[in-house]
Length: 294
Image 1 (cartoon, rainbow, N blue to C red):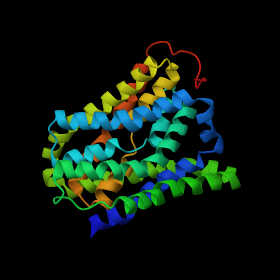
Image 2: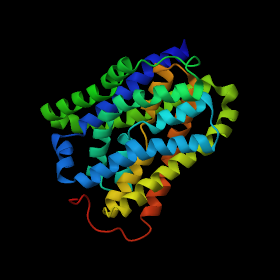
Image 3: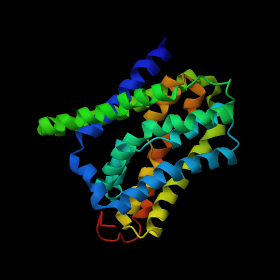
Image 4: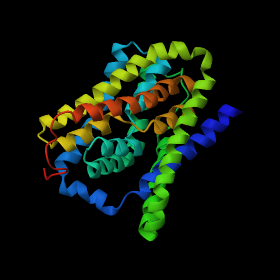
């Protein structure tokens, strides 16, 4: 019963709160920024929507993660960034405006891409008869309701009552983090007996995916001659994922606790690696300027 309450009630509410908080911080100009700085936004979307899932498949193959554990890591790699990536981008002296724009746009795209990629992935890694079915159309609707709808509500509140939105934004963000850690703790309690083995199987893989994705995003953006602030942000957006979305898919929609292990471990690791990344990229002299026209 406790596990059911966690996955069926607490987790969807947690994700709804996170996305509502994101909406409270957004204004229409955040979406118009795509037209002003198309190169930076396009690069960020390419690395996050294409490079990150590819890296996920590579890591799963290299570490021989079979079945549900591997699917869980792929599910995480298919998820967008979140308010955590916006916060880490700010602390790391990245381009916060670009971070917010990428998070918002990718969060709207991923309700469609997650089921479209995850269903054939489960068939390939687990066999079509060995996993709970994930109806693509129904899953898209559910993800839109729990991710895109609260963003729209938050933006509406921001538009109609900007002072109230500003005051509540911080509280909602704190509650979101508390919810995330509560969900992770609940999942670990459910799988406590197998946890040491799961950590051994997924810990290094999750760390590898996290570190590699941030490096690919950062150095890839620099190769495209984006500013260092933009490169920092893209590295963070690619490496810091909305673990709550992944946990919603694996724990609530698929009801598979084993699939939730990799996203849970990744969600814990990314706070530490995000801090290390922020320190490392600021050791040298940061090139002046934030988002600049492509």
